[in-house]
Length: 280
Ligand code: SAM
Image (cartoon, rainbow, N blue to C red; front, top):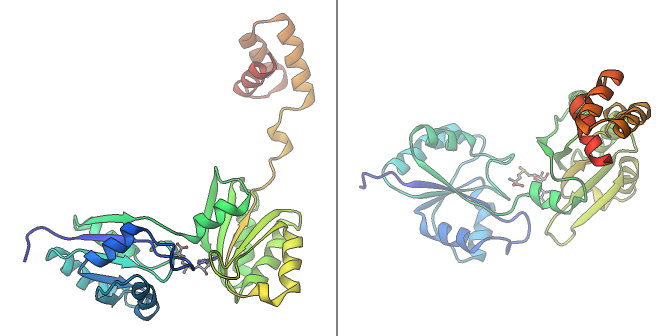
C-alpha cells in the first residue's frame, strides 16, 4: 500500500464515432487500475474496440453517492482511477460531480484527459457566435416549466445551448418557437459524428417545419443552439446624438466633443468617446 494517494483521471470518450478518442485517453485507460463507468455494458464496446481490458465498476446517477466512498478509499490507498461516461466529457450533463468535489475536498489529484463533448462539437459547426454562449444542459421536461425557463432566457444576448432527446425534441422546438418567435436563428445538431449526422439551421419556424415533416429527423440525440436576442435599438446612440457629436467634432478636441455630446444627449460619455474615435 502506498502513502501517496492516486489520481482520478476524468477521461472524455467519443460521442458517436468510436475512433474519436485521444491516444492519451487510451493510454490512461490502459494504465489505471480501474475505470468507473456510467454504464459498464455500454462502455465495454468502446474498451474492446481499443484493446483496453482494465476492470470497470459502475458509477451512475443512482449509486453515485454510495459508490464514491469506495472510489475515494481506492484513491487514498494509492490507486489511479479513471472516470468515463456513456459519451463525451464526464460531468457535462453526466455523473461525476460529487466524486470530483469529494476528491478536491480530500486533497486527491483530479486530472482531465480532454476530448469530445457534444456541446463543443455542435458550437464549432453551428455558424452561430461562439465568443459568448450559455449552456443549459437539458430543459425541464414539463412544457410549463420549459416555457418559463425560455421566457427568462429570451432577452439574453449570448448563444443559448441545450441538450435534447428524441422524446422531447418536437415539444421543445414548438415551445421555443412560441416563446422566442419563429424568426430567431437556430441550429439543431443531430447525431454528431454518427452515420446519420444532420445539422439543420435557419429560422426557428423553418427548422421546426423540417423536423415536423420528417420523422427520421426526430430520432437520435440533439444539441439545440439558439442565437442570442437581437441587440435592441437603444444600444445604438440615436441619429440625433451622432449628428451632434459630428458637429462638435468639427470644432472641438475629441474628448471635449464626446463629453459635451454626452451632456446634451444623455448618452454615455465612454460610448460617445469610442464612437468619436471611430468617426475621426
Ligand atoms: N457528457 C456528454 C457530452 O460531453 O456531450 C453529454 C451527455 S448527455 C447525458 C447526453 C446528451 O448529449 C444527448 O441527449 C444529446 O443532447 C447530447 N449528445 C450526445 N451525443 C450527441 C451526438 N452525437 N449528437 C448530438 N447530440 C449529442
